[in-house]
View 1 (cartoon, rainbow over the protein chains, first blue to last red):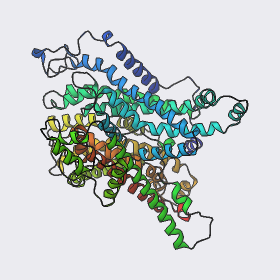
View 2 (view 1 turned 45 degrees about the vertical axis):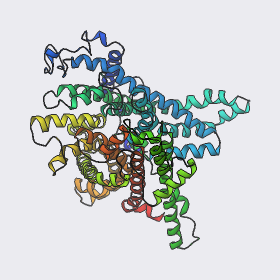
View 3 (view 1 turned 180 degrees about the vertical axis):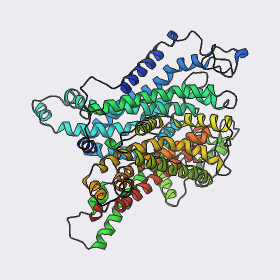
View 4 (view 1 turned 90 degrees about the horizontal axis):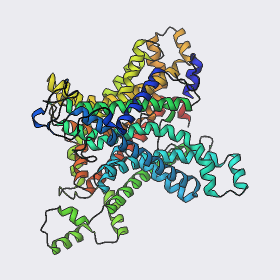
Length: 286
Length: 342
């Protein structure tokens, strides 16, 4: 509604589908670069991320070591590059898991009858009333620490939001004429869900999932920073930040560069997410 | 710090449906006091149901905690005899049926007792009480700062196609995308270690509060400014703005006195998200700045699997959330007279 009023107030450039502005283009370029680094960090650096060199410890950024070296003489640049895979996978895994869990939850609520709906949605209400990070910490308390546990914890915290969305979409689609027609033709319930209900819910779900990926990246690296996720020898960005916290006085670069990597990734994801949302809302992008 | 919400997906207040059902506007039936009573009653039920739900969730968590609670209680290095273990089991009621434990737990909660910490041998409420002040100071300082930054940034730039506006918009995007723990580390590096303007850690005096509050406030300010600007731009496009200008009001007076009131409504819908972000954010910020507080207590309890304390914090968060959403609902009425008719 707000969007519509703004549109009326002053002319908004309407871009044709497929054309994107420079900001969005660079966001996708950054994402592609991060994905490439995550897939093949060896393409960008020959230096080992775990090999220690006590003689070269705590050197500042310079020609030999672009991002400096840490307290054990490990090259921070190589560590940041090699950290892309575990860090991005942690966030991506949490998002995918949350999307799947949220979809099942939402479908069960929408199509599983009144009791299932009441239970499912009241649980979502309660979980949504708690801070996401606190919910994730609660789950970590139950599961213990580790990368998979943190992934699950972040996913569980994000799940009720997706569940609500899927339920709402499924309810709308279920009452539409063509689904009733399909049901009238005797289509099995499962086939109906997969073939008709899900494809309609998938658009808004993916838009929300893109924005959620950014949030998951922040929370997952945050939990690693708190010492609950990836553990120190791993070059995961949050864990590196946690190590770097102890050396701020003498060697700021140990903590600052991995954090900058998280931030760049999240900015790129958020710009891409906004673009997806704007396109989904009617192909209008300012 | 959760997904930066915009007006498109602004969360609705949790109990929006409850009062609406209780006080139907068209129904002239019961007299006004009755209606008020029913509205208040419905609200209380909504509050109680969220709290009961959170308590149940926490209790389920406690029961799902893997391992023998007695072993968790005693810690890894213990020489406790079986007799002592049995005594602890009986003292804590671990041998009772689960349903009975649950009812007992709810009964204790009604008396304001949150149980006893497994590790620190103290009541959870006392532990939370001790740590409450530094966190409250941090959260309120951050909230105040975020609101001031957002209001100034949105009022000065809404609806203007200037370089300043795009610069601020870009800054807001960076702010909402920046993990607070990294922001804190950058601020510490620059202002504490390099320039030495602020102390590195501690809670003594206002000096120690500045950097943590800024760290917590900036990402929030980014979100608030975005939502506020969008709201302001919508309001500024309304005919009443032209009327107000025609009456001779200055541009800035129109913004502050008229448009801002409209723009504040979408801002209010964010209060739930805001509370959660402040509460959750303190865990990270207190860790970065080595501050004591609820966040530090939570982290310590998560690390030692001290479930009763974690449960206490979860319940506190739920309580704060329901109180804030009730206050928010009242604020809607204060800000928007159109809603007062019910």
